[in-house]
Length: 231
Image 1 (tube, rainbow, N blue to C red):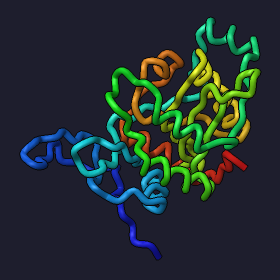
Image 2 (cartoon, rainbow, N blue to C red; image 1 turned 30 degrees about the vertical axis):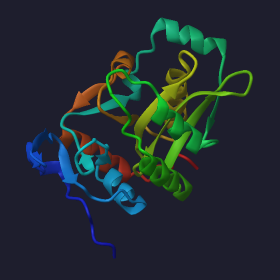
Image 3 (cartoon, helix red, strand yellow; image 1 turned 120 degrees about the vertical axis):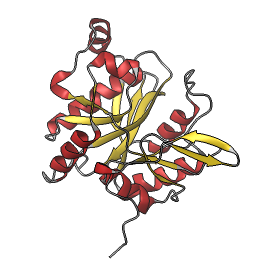
């Protein structure tokens, strides 16, 4: 039996600061620092409500933030303008058709609030391996010319989809890819998804933050249902 790498974050009290090479870094919600990024560790981490997020200058942090952002499907509010674009049917959506292109596009996406990218080449390689192992998944948005113009990827944590990142090359492509994913998950019995940390776009859709302890309880409950989200 494989020895567990990560602690149960439910009562984990991470150190607030760490000093590395004379600099102090804040570590709110970090439950492990410097644990290798491997497919085995990724699988275990997500099953426990933990995810890696590369930060320059410090060993790889693995996070279980408190509070945690989630999107509950029956609380979603679709803005009128987005609903109108959705009805126009400008895009075609697929699942797991081109995972590598999606994660690479996410790594290249311009994010003014995030200098650089946390999706490093190592992240891409390991998450592609997780996709090939069947627990990382992508949604693709294609335009009428067959070009990949938006999408997202994430991890199935055993009945709960944990969203990682989104990108778009045409307006609303990533937003509509998310709505497509939600419809897919609903059809398979899911009622919510993990978005990790709040963003303005997801807040506009009705996402909210809940205490980490509550999130982990929801995660564990979902894991007992045996939902198959991507079969």
